[in-house]
Amino acid sequence: MITMVGVHFCREGFCLAIPGRLTLGRGLTLLVGPNGAGKSTLLEVLSTAAMPDRGEIWYRDRRVMEDLTGIRGTIGYLPADFQPYAHMTPRRFLQYMAVLKGVDPGIEVEEKLARTDLVPVCDIKIAKLSEGMKRRLGIAQALLGSPEVLLLDEPLTYLDGVARRKMIEFLTQYARGRTVVAASHELDEWDQVDRIVWLEQGQPAFFGPPELWVTGLGEKVWSKVLDPEELEGLESRRILARRWTGDRVRVRFFARTAPGDGFREEVPTLQEAYVIRREERRIGP
Image (cartoon, rainbow, N blue to C red; front, side, top):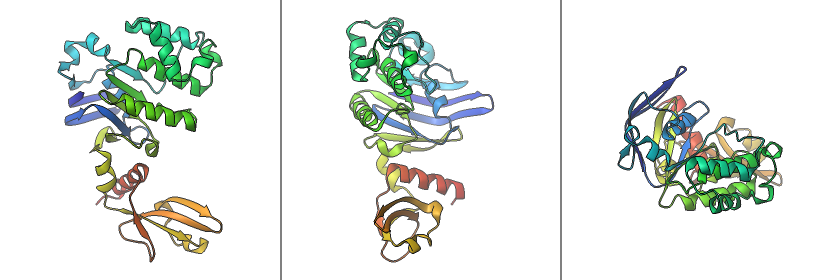
């Protein structure tokens, strides 16, 4: 469990501000927001790679400044700009990182290679690996020692569809009994999160469970199968999705009331709720 109390961190014209108290308990927290909202900065601060200018961060019952070394030993962190040593192999790199973390590099390294599907390339120079393989390696090093707190900045970047689904399934299970925070711009892929933190301009705009995320909206989601000429009558920026079947199209559209006869109200997806919340924030009450 991580608790932030009045945390402020400012660098190069950008400020991250967490007013009051915000607690990330056990389970999977999804961190969302546009580019530049402060997601990476927040993860950097939570990882202790950067220290807040004021405020306190507690890891269970310990404050960072009271037990920095001990707290760092409980954290696994994947930064957005993860760059492993290109001249090493994945196995050698994980062995090196395990020693730095005080973890036995034997069985632990082999387990993490298997967990991230890196065994087939474990003895190939990192310089020759694809970006997806390098991302898996970043996740593997964050998992060394099975940390109590796992912080992942865009862990699905460069992964293919199958790998993404496997990783989400694993992280969902791993989060049971641990604190996992993942920043992502692909909300719909994370279908079993425990809570969502939405950042806008360095401040939380929403914090709560996914059930509240998709229901506490001023706008609603509507769907209908339309002819092409009917589609032209809808405001394009309010169309959430369209799927063609033959010469007709099923659309999902958001509005306060049904845009016409025959539209059916739907439960928003996580991504649709994000689009709606950003639009509501843009236009105001």
